[in-house]
Image 1 (cartoon, rainbow, N blue to C red):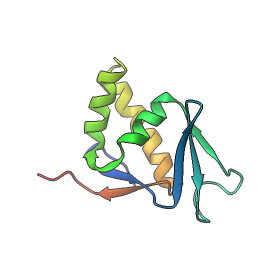
Image 2: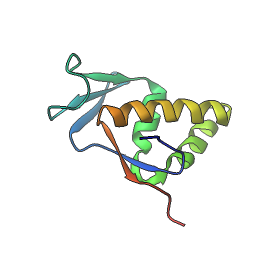
Image 3: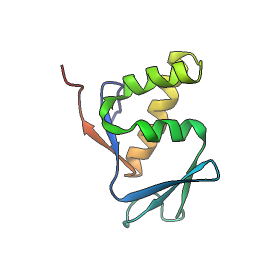
Image 4: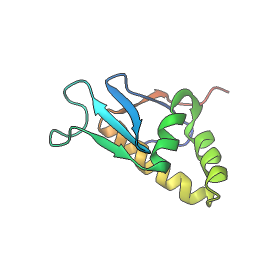
Length: 104
């Protein structure tokens, strides 16, 4: 599945996430989530910022716009990084595409 900026994503109910010592720790609760070799996943500050915005309401474009402003970064760099991370998280079933297109 190709992930696009007009999609809306949400974190999977099959994972639990907690911030511990400034790192986001994600723990799969069901088999088939993530990779068999990995049991815990950690994310840096940018990953936490993305994860916290995956509410099932905001488009990825809206999230990218927020992040570009928050981190004073070029929008095209943020968009590329965001799509890369979301694509990987969807592949690992840690994030699901909630809606294919933003409401008009």
